Image (cartoon, rainbow, N blue to C red; front, side, top):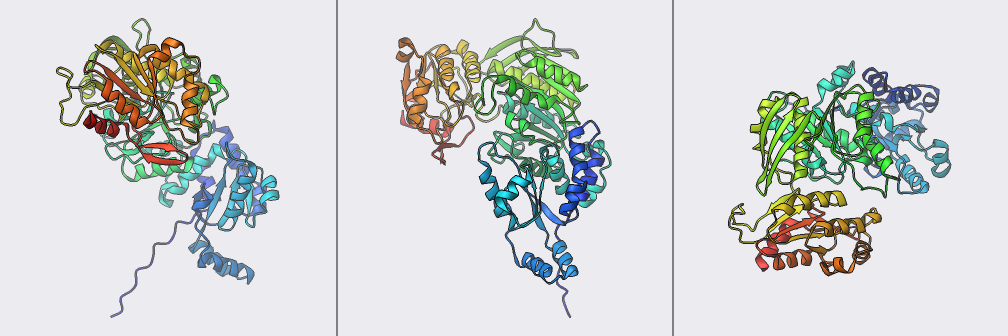
Amino acid sequence: MTVEQAQPTPPKVQTLRNLITVALRVLPPQQTTAHVVLQALLQKELQQEAVLDIPFAKFVLDNRQLTPANAAHRGTLAAVENNDIEADASVAINHPKEVFVLLKSHTQPIDTSANYVQMAAKHAAFILSEIDDELITAMARPNCPIVSVVDIRSVLGTLLQLSLLTSAERQSLHSLADLVQLFPKVVAITGTNGKTTTSQLVAQLCQLSGRDGLINSAVMGTAGNGRLNHLRQSSHTTGDALAVQTFLQTMLEEGVDVLALEASSHGLHQQRLQGVPVQVAVYTNLSRDHLDYHPDMQEYAAAKAKLFDTAHFPTLTHAIINIDDEFAPLMLQTAAASGLQIWTYSLDANKTATFTAAQLNPSLNGVEIELVTHFGTVWLNSPLLGRFNVANLLAAIGAAMALGIELADIPNLVTKLQGADGRMQRVMPKGLPQSMSTPATACFIVDYAHTPDALTQVLSSLKPHCQGQLWAVFGCGGDRDSGKRPLMAQAGLALADKVILTADNPRSESPEAILADMQQGMTADQLAKTTVIGDRREAIQQAVKRAGVQDIVVIAGKGHETYQEINGVRHDFDDRQVLQAAFLLR
């Protein structure tokens, strides 16, 4: 009896023309730039290159990820040389190549991009280039079709998204509403500080609610990507467009109901989130950061404001905005121009906001909050430490209610919340109870605060509860905004009784040079209460050794991170684990 061999699953084959056709059905008319770009892709310049109907397997943004030429690809070339059109078509369909998308680099010269094209041309079906094709062609002389699409970022996310769907899923899409219905509900949080905590609180509130359509929640951001309690480490707050869309597709396949993601200013400026069906946009705050990338604070704020613009995110329905922040008017103006439902929040009882923390009773066990809203008033017992976490909680409550959770359910849900890893996280020696009633050691807090404002917020939240001395152990990252360094030191010195300056992630810079920058402008009195210890492990050990039982010690800057980057190498380093080891050495 002959056993019939199982046939391999045929590869996914698609064409640019098919993807563009679906994209034009889905994207609304107000996305004028996207429509212009897509229509241009169907016009004569592309048809001259004859790439619209070339079958391909997938898009690739990194030339190193292109599948090397194999026997099937060589067969394609042989068929072309022999003018065997039928054989050429068969091989192209059954063994499709990939499409390389060349994006402009913000850090590398044009000749590096030309080198990428040279390498990609050996294996790609064709190349779509954000850089002028004549310039690239002159430098690289690729032997495969290359088409310049100057505004490709305005449609790239959508094309990537559609390419990852099955043919049946693509055919089911006839409008933007179909796209929203297909994918998880997306809440996007932007701001300098609070993105990670707020995103995790949104996901937790939804999951704890037990409501159909909300219970299966996930996050994407600095502390990791994935469903709650199943996070995978991430390399960026907002990954590149392909990473974002691949993750979104994974969440769709895993049946996730709600995705709360962090939207970084880099990601928004570079349109890495284009095509993500964001429904609720949240703004936390803006303070000095990333000025090595953005020219000034106004440009930094403008990048954040893109999240509230339906020209970029046409699926938006709600904007949740912190009106205590000085850049809130820009976000409010952008959201209003887009016709969004705007809900505001504030920690100032004298302001009129949708959600207001009218009374706060903080302690080292959390905060009791009187929450006054346009929907009623409730009292909350939050287990999260710090005044700034009250703001994060209000933002998360607003987002959760925008998704359908009732105010009456909020108090019970809040008691069950957990803070994000490395965010205002208290680390106790293992084996001791989490109580401050009979402390056997100082109170040690690990936090990701790596901006002057964030450090100020952490220290000011803890200062009223410190019966002894308040310590701050922190540094500044290398290869980043150097103007922030003395400001970080001053933020620590303004509130802490004792400061230990140490290394953060020095990257390619000298830790000593970074520490010298931090000490610029310090007075004699400030120098007297400052200790400089370049080795971060030793700095933490000294803090543990020297702190009294009534003291509070904040170890800031790295939070959840499990590495320290030095000269391009990531060494194992987790502030929380280093603390535990230091406890044993006391």
